[in-house]
Length: 257
Image (cartoon, rainbow, N blue to C red):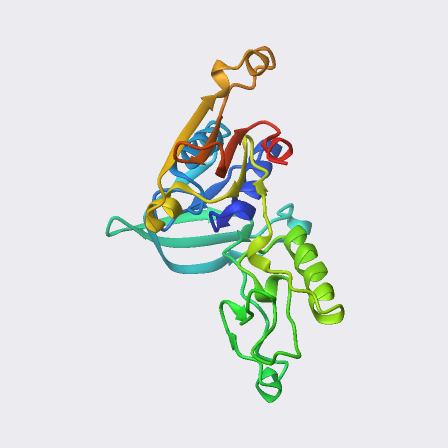
Protein backbone atom coordinates (compact mmCIF):
# COMPACT_ATOMS: atom_id res chain seq x y z
CA UNK A 1 0.00 0.00 0.00
CA UNK A 2 1.26 3.48 -0.84
CA UNK A 3 0.29 6.49 1.28
CA UNK A 4 0.45 10.04 -0.06
CA UNK A 5 0.14 12.51 2.80
CA UNK A 6 1.99 12.55 6.10
CA UNK A 7 -0.55 14.35 8.26
CA UNK A 8 -2.75 12.74 10.95
CA UNK A 9 -5.03 10.80 8.58
CA UNK A 10 -2.18 9.48 6.47
CA UNK A 11 -0.20 8.37 9.52
CA UNK A 12 -3.18 6.74 11.24
CA UNK A 13 -4.14 4.72 8.16
CA UNK A 14 -0.54 3.80 7.32
CA UNK A 15 0.09 2.37 10.78
CA UNK A 16 -3.25 0.58 10.86
CA UNK A 17 -2.61 -1.20 7.55
CA UNK A 18 0.96 -2.01 8.57
CA UNK A 19 -0.39 -3.74 11.66
CA UNK A 20 -2.87 -5.65 9.52
CA UNK A 21 0.17 -7.09 7.78
CA UNK A 22 0.45 -4.96 4.65
CA UNK A 23 3.73 -3.57 3.36
CA UNK A 24 3.25 0.18 3.59
CA UNK A 25 5.20 2.88 1.76
CA UNK A 26 4.89 6.51 2.87
CA UNK A 27 6.08 9.28 0.58
CA UNK A 28 7.54 12.40 2.20
CA UNK A 29 8.34 15.63 0.39
CA UNK A 30 10.46 16.54 3.39
CA UNK A 31 12.11 14.41 6.05
CA UNK A 32 9.42 14.03 8.67
CA UNK A 33 5.72 13.40 9.37
CA UNK A 34 3.06 15.36 11.30
CA UNK A 35 4.74 18.66 10.51
CA UNK A 36 2.35 20.69 12.67
CA UNK A 37 3.47 18.84 15.81
CA UNK A 38 6.64 19.53 17.77
CA UNK A 39 9.85 17.82 16.71
CA UNK A 40 10.07 15.48 19.72
CA UNK A 41 6.55 14.17 19.06
CA UNK A 42 7.28 13.55 15.39
CA UNK A 43 10.42 11.64 16.27
CA UNK A 44 8.66 9.32 18.73
CA UNK A 45 5.79 8.50 16.35
CA UNK A 46 8.03 8.06 13.32
CA UNK A 47 10.25 5.64 15.25
CA UNK A 48 7.19 3.60 16.26
CA UNK A 49 5.89 3.50 12.69
CA UNK A 50 9.28 2.39 11.38
CA UNK A 51 9.28 -0.41 13.96
CA UNK A 52 5.91 -1.49 12.51
CA UNK A 53 7.65 -1.93 9.16
CA UNK A 54 6.52 1.22 7.39
CA UNK A 55 8.97 2.26 4.66
CA UNK A 56 9.57 6.01 4.45
CA UNK A 57 10.67 7.54 1.15
CA UNK A 58 12.04 10.98 2.06
CA UNK A 59 12.75 14.12 0.05
CA UNK A 60 10.84 12.93 -2.98
CA UNK A 61 9.17 14.60 -5.93
CA UNK A 62 6.31 12.93 -7.79
CA UNK A 63 6.90 12.34 -11.50
CA UNK A 64 3.99 10.04 -12.43
CA UNK A 65 1.45 7.55 -11.08
CA UNK A 66 0.29 4.86 -13.52
CA UNK A 67 -1.91 1.80 -13.46
CA UNK A 68 0.41 -0.95 -14.66
CA UNK A 69 -2.02 -3.90 -14.58
CA UNK A 70 -5.69 -3.90 -13.53
CA UNK A 71 -7.17 -6.30 -11.04
CA UNK A 72 -8.36 -9.61 -12.47
CA UNK A 73 -10.08 -11.81 -9.91
CA UNK A 74 -10.69 -14.59 -12.44
CA UNK A 75 -6.94 -14.81 -12.98
CA UNK A 76 -6.31 -14.83 -9.24
CA UNK A 77 -5.16 -11.18 -9.08
CA UNK A 78 -7.65 -9.36 -6.80
CA UNK A 79 -5.58 -6.15 -6.70
CA UNK A 80 -4.15 -3.92 -9.42
CA UNK A 81 -0.50 -2.95 -9.72
CA UNK A 82 0.14 0.79 -9.49
CA UNK A 83 3.55 2.22 -10.31
CA UNK A 84 4.65 5.42 -8.59
CA UNK A 85 7.59 7.10 -10.27
CA UNK A 86 9.52 9.42 -7.98
CA UNK A 87 12.60 11.59 -8.04
CA UNK A 88 14.81 11.23 -4.98
CA UNK A 89 18.21 12.90 -4.70
CA UNK A 90 18.22 13.50 -8.49
CA UNK A 91 17.67 9.76 -9.09
CA UNK A 92 14.54 8.04 -10.38
CA UNK A 93 12.80 5.66 -7.98
CA UNK A 94 9.90 3.38 -8.93
CA UNK A 95 7.64 1.90 -6.23
CA UNK A 96 4.95 -0.66 -7.12
CA UNK A 97 1.90 -0.92 -4.86
CA UNK A 98 -1.49 -2.64 -5.01
CA UNK A 99 -3.46 0.23 -3.47
CA UNK A 100 -2.92 3.95 -3.02
CA UNK A 101 -4.26 6.07 -0.16
CA UNK A 102 -4.35 9.79 -0.89
CA UNK A 103 -4.53 11.80 2.34
CA UNK A 104 -3.03 15.02 1.04
CA UNK A 105 -5.39 17.41 2.80
CA UNK A 106 -8.70 19.08 2.13
CA UNK A 107 -9.91 22.40 0.83
CA UNK A 108 -13.33 23.99 1.39
CA UNK A 109 -15.98 23.75 -1.30
CA UNK A 110 -16.91 27.43 -1.46
CA UNK A 111 -16.89 28.27 -5.16
CA UNK A 112 -20.29 26.91 -6.21
CA UNK A 113 -22.65 28.74 -3.83
CA UNK A 114 -22.51 32.20 -5.47
CA UNK A 115 -21.32 33.70 -2.21
CA UNK A 116 -20.21 36.83 -4.06
CA UNK A 117 -23.85 37.72 -4.72
CA UNK A 118 -24.46 37.79 -0.96
CA UNK A 119 -21.37 39.89 -0.28
CA UNK A 120 -19.54 37.01 1.40
CA UNK A 121 -15.79 36.96 0.82
CA UNK A 122 -13.82 33.72 0.81
CA UNK A 123 -10.46 32.20 -0.01
CA UNK A 124 -10.40 29.01 -2.10
CA UNK A 125 -7.93 27.42 0.34
CA UNK A 126 -8.82 28.94 3.70
CA UNK A 127 -12.58 29.09 3.21
CA UNK A 128 -15.14 31.70 4.18
CA UNK A 129 -13.73 34.80 5.86
CA UNK A 130 -15.21 35.33 9.31
CA UNK A 131 -14.49 37.63 12.25
CA UNK A 132 -14.07 36.52 15.85
CA UNK A 133 -17.86 36.35 16.27
CA UNK A 134 -18.05 34.12 13.15
CA UNK A 135 -19.76 36.79 11.06
CA UNK A 136 -18.87 36.82 7.39
CA UNK A 137 -18.22 40.01 5.42
CA UNK A 138 -22.01 40.20 5.22
CA UNK A 139 -22.79 40.79 8.93
CA UNK A 140 -26.19 39.10 8.58
CA UNK A 141 -24.57 35.81 7.53
CA UNK A 142 -22.53 33.61 9.85
CA UNK A 143 -20.34 30.63 9.01
CA UNK A 144 -18.94 27.77 11.06
CA UNK A 145 -17.26 24.40 10.68
CA UNK A 146 -14.53 23.25 8.31
CA UNK A 147 -15.43 25.88 5.70
CA UNK A 148 -14.52 28.70 8.10
CA UNK A 149 -11.83 27.37 10.42
CA UNK A 150 -8.26 26.13 10.31
CA UNK A 151 -9.25 23.57 12.97
CA UNK A 152 -11.00 20.87 10.93
CA UNK A 153 -12.38 18.76 13.77
CA UNK A 154 -15.93 17.65 14.49
CA UNK A 155 -15.74 18.97 18.05
CA UNK A 156 -14.58 22.36 16.77
CA UNK A 157 -17.49 22.49 14.33
CA UNK A 158 -19.80 21.73 17.26
CA UNK A 159 -18.29 24.53 19.39
CA UNK A 160 -18.57 26.99 16.50
CA UNK A 161 -22.18 26.04 15.75
CA UNK A 162 -23.15 26.70 19.37
CA UNK A 163 -21.38 30.04 19.20
CA UNK A 164 -23.20 31.01 15.99
CA UNK A 165 -26.59 30.16 17.51
CA UNK A 166 -25.91 32.41 20.51
CA UNK A 167 -24.50 35.28 18.45
CA UNK A 168 -26.95 35.17 15.55
CA UNK A 169 -30.20 34.42 17.36
CA UNK A 170 -29.72 35.65 20.91
CA UNK A 171 -27.54 38.73 20.38
CA UNK A 172 -24.58 37.05 22.01
CA UNK A 173 -21.04 38.36 22.09
CA UNK A 174 -19.11 35.07 22.08
CA UNK A 175 -15.71 34.91 20.39
CA UNK A 176 -14.11 31.99 18.58
CA UNK A 177 -10.71 32.98 19.99
CA UNK A 178 -11.99 32.15 23.48
CA UNK A 179 -12.50 28.47 22.57
CA UNK A 180 -9.96 26.03 23.97
CA UNK A 181 -9.49 23.36 21.32
CA UNK A 182 -7.67 20.10 22.09
CA UNK A 183 -6.92 17.53 19.39
CA UNK A 184 -5.33 14.13 19.03
CA UNK A 185 -3.74 11.97 16.34
CA UNK A 186 -4.57 8.31 16.93
CA UNK A 187 -1.31 6.70 15.98
CA UNK A 188 0.48 4.46 18.45
CA UNK A 189 1.68 6.23 20.47
CA UNK A 190 -1.02 8.88 20.24
CA UNK A 191 -0.16 12.58 19.97
CA UNK A 192 -2.44 15.06 21.75
CA UNK A 193 -2.11 18.81 22.03
CA UNK A 194 -3.91 21.84 23.40
CA UNK A 195 -3.01 25.51 23.42
CA UNK A 196 0.12 27.00 21.90
CA UNK A 197 3.34 25.43 20.69
CA UNK A 198 6.81 26.55 21.70
CA UNK A 199 7.38 28.06 18.24
CA UNK A 200 4.20 30.14 18.64
CA UNK A 201 5.44 31.59 21.92
CA UNK A 202 8.87 32.35 20.48
CA UNK A 203 7.33 34.21 17.54
CA UNK A 204 5.20 36.31 19.92
CA UNK A 205 8.13 36.97 22.24
CA UNK A 206 6.37 35.38 25.21
CA UNK A 207 8.59 34.22 28.07
CA UNK A 208 7.77 30.67 29.17
CA UNK A 209 8.91 27.72 31.26
CA UNK A 210 8.95 24.07 30.15
CA UNK A 211 8.00 21.08 32.28
CA UNK A 212 8.62 17.71 30.67
CA UNK A 213 8.29 14.18 32.00
CA UNK A 214 9.06 11.06 29.97
CA UNK A 215 6.86 8.01 30.50
CA UNK A 216 9.93 5.84 31.00
CA UNK A 217 10.26 7.66 34.34
CA UNK A 218 6.65 6.96 35.39
CA UNK A 219 6.04 3.80 37.46
CA UNK A 220 2.55 3.14 36.05
CA UNK A 221 3.79 3.42 32.47
CA UNK A 222 6.68 1.08 33.25
CA UNK A 223 4.32 -1.51 34.76
CA UNK A 224 2.01 -1.24 31.73
CA UNK A 225 4.98 -1.51 29.33
CA UNK A 226 3.89 1.77 27.75
CA UNK A 227 7.02 3.85 28.24
CA UNK A 228 7.15 5.49 24.81
CA UNK A 229 6.46 9.22 24.86
CA UNK A 230 6.22 12.09 27.30
CA UNK A 231 4.15 14.94 28.76
CA UNK A 232 5.35 18.46 27.97
CA UNK A 233 3.70 21.54 29.49
CA UNK A 234 4.45 25.17 28.66
CA UNK A 235 3.63 27.77 31.31
CA UNK A 236 3.97 31.52 31.46
CA UNK A 237 7.39 32.34 32.89
CA UNK A 238 7.46 32.26 36.69
CA UNK A 239 3.75 31.42 36.76
CA UNK A 240 1.46 28.40 36.90
CA UNK A 241 -0.64 29.60 33.94
CA UNK A 242 -0.60 26.86 31.28
CA UNK A 243 -0.06 28.17 27.75
CA UNK A 244 0.11 24.84 25.93
CA UNK A 245 0.62 21.12 26.43
CA UNK A 246 1.59 18.12 24.34
CA UNK A 247 1.22 14.48 25.36
CA UNK A 248 2.76 11.66 23.36
CA UNK A 249 1.90 8.20 24.59
CA UNK A 250 -0.74 5.55 25.05
CA UNK A 251 -4.18 7.12 25.72
CA UNK A 252 -2.80 10.64 25.18
CA UNK A 253 -6.11 11.65 23.63
CA UNK A 254 -7.89 10.81 26.89
CA UNK A 255 -5.30 12.46 29.11
CA UNK A 256 -5.34 15.81 27.26
CA UNK A 257 -9.00 16.26 28.28
